[in-house]
Amino acid sequence: MSLPIFLITCFVAAELGQLGAAMSPTLALYWPSTGVLLAILLGRERRSWPVWMAVAAAAICLSLIAHGSPLMVGALAAGMTTFDALLAAAEAGFLALLLERLDDVFHGRPSDMVEAR
Picture 1 (tube, rainbow, N blue to C red):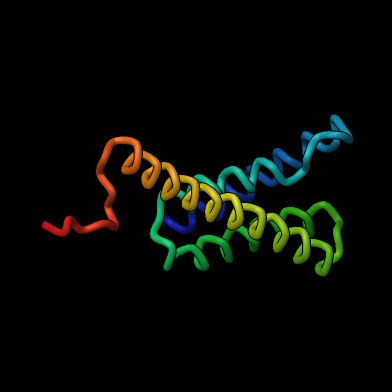
Picture 2: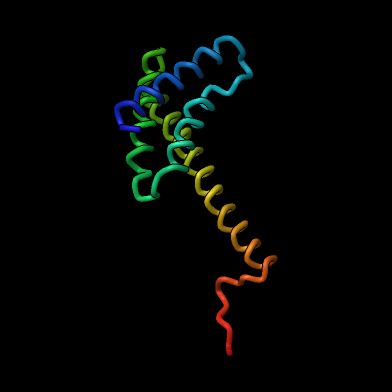
């Protein structure tokens, strides 16, 4: 996915969150855009994550400003949303590593051990 398409996708996801929050006050406003960003982060190399996070934060901030939020509120909410996706992506990476290690242990393939023979 290119960055401009991702920007539009994040903006639309943020708008869907705004629409959902208007219909139900208990609906989490930022989950759609967090999910879109998380999907991108999980499919990309870590060194490219800051670029994707910055684009998502800009789209979320623009959506909030378009609905009358002050710039500082939009920036803080966008920062929290991108940080949430970052934490989820890092946790998913850690879980994948842990599962790989457990698979090695239970199937007799210790990847960090060298046979002494």
